[in-house]
Amino acid sequence: MKCRRCRGPAVIEVRRHNAGFCSDCFLHHCHEQVRRTIDDFSMTGAGERVLVAVSGGKDSLALWDILLDLGHDVDGLYLGLGIGEYSDQSGDYARAFAARRGAKLVEVDLPADYGFDIPAGSAAAHRVPCSACGLSKRHLFNRAALDGGYDVVATGHNLDDEAAVLFGNVLRWSTDYLGRQLPVLPEREGFVRKVKPLVRLAERETAAYCVLAGIDYIVEECPMAAGNRHLGYKHALDSIEEQSPGTKAAFYFGFLDRASALFTPQAAVEQDGLRACVSCGAPTTAEVCAFCKLLERART
Ligand code: Q46
Ligand code: ZN
Image (cartoon, rainbow, N blue to C red; front, side, top):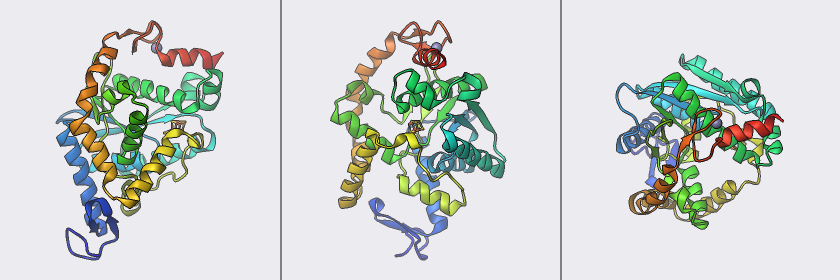
């Protein structure tokens, strides 16, 4: 197979684009996919400061690398979740990348800064780990961005992630989530803008990007992910994609083009009743925000 761009020998095939690429042209292709996504969805503009949430995994490090290459003013944010060896190692990969690129890494550590870790905290709060983890991440990414004067938080959600979440939301007709499942969530009082610039790249492509760009990343998945529903949806979509390349992209981008607007009024109603958490000041629909409730239970 030949490279679509330079006609040299291809090292990777991307079946949904019906194309092969050599190493340099594949890296160029990934940069272009991200640049186009940022432009098409007006994710960030000139002079804005971007904070990219990095886990030490392939997606977030590829994203940080690409944003740096594209000339964005971007720092990294690493959140230590206290998930044993996995967290120790993922932090090391994030720090090594920052050092290699001469980039700034902001660090927040749940055990050191908030007195609980995800395994113990979720058990004490009677929540599944990924639920406690997800709400902590949303809260602390936003907090770190506000405190650091950033305009936008970027996360490494890729096409496979977004298609799997969409699949789950459709299976359950979770209309409130469907209304919010956008690659850009605009800034509002108390919230910075949130963007997902990797939605045009599949998981396999971000892994290939890291290998070809010489980026070391943590290969192990978080041990708490085993058995979660999201992984089951990913496997189901993988087998459909295998039979019919391009299905995931058609599903996700078709939703954005033709269906997502139908669900946004529902999401808007939910956002109307926001007020400040009495404990931390973060916007919430209750008196105390979900993170402060978790914190209180996890510490007792
Ligand atoms: S880090 Fe956290 Fe994930 Fe681990 S506990 Fe679940 S949500 S699986 S992306
Ligand atoms: Zn709070």
